Image (cartoon, rainbow, N blue to C red):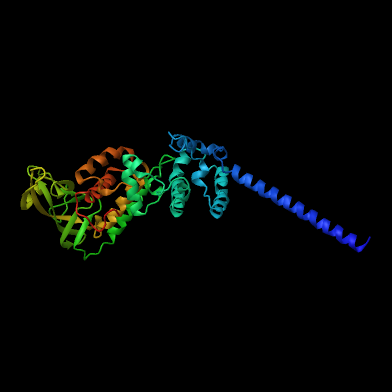
Length: 385
């Protein structure tokens, strides 16, 4: 065989290898893309037994059926479009396969037990990506806000101003929200821990929860009244774990059982028994121009245990804001605190309370928070925290 024929045959061989390699590469690429695509479609996602509950929630949401006939599939919300994030998500999906194999959520009871954990993981991912998958369909820039519902017209400008992202307000848009009671309980525990480290030199303190008080430092079996969460106290003296302080507020003429944080505002500060009412000192009297009612500014000297008092009220507000975010924004979006006045907020919270997992004590803290930051209250540095 001549050298030229050998070289020609060799080149032809390499050409065939190249062609076969390209074909194999194309086949692998096409096969890989097909696998990736098929394992991202909704039919595949809900094929597992454990997805029956999430599927039922999704089918009851506006993302499944709506007047415009636009359906967001599972991957539209849960699989990022950016190549690197896409591949990372597909690789991390191995944990879901493992969860299916080990039966992590194979019963309704197990599903409910892990629902908050799973939801928080998704919320964290969406928050970190600025809700990238949501924004592939929705964007503030493309919204005709004036054509939206009254609720949306209220909320979206607030979200834009505050730099919020979609998941901050729309946690419950495709799935029923999990039970948030454990989150609220953890927040209350953190608040109690902070109160335990309140400096002994603090001159202004705030009740972190509904707090019994006494008229003497020697506590008897029955207290003389109760302070409401966030009520302010001016420290007079201390004796061991007991603090003597002055609590002041406004009392409506003829209503002696309670007093409030501000004139004309039903922001409860204290509930009084008969002895406490007799000890009240009236500092001034004035007329509310809006209602014509007479109000008295009053003060009372009391004794309270140190354990449930804190010197930084912003920590109470952060606890309340977290509860509001976890329990309210999933349905209502980011409601501006100055959307209602202090008295209106009472009805709003009472009306929504049955739809949350909050206890009566937690609802009191939340009510104080929204009332103290209402439209007719003085603006503070902690507003909207």
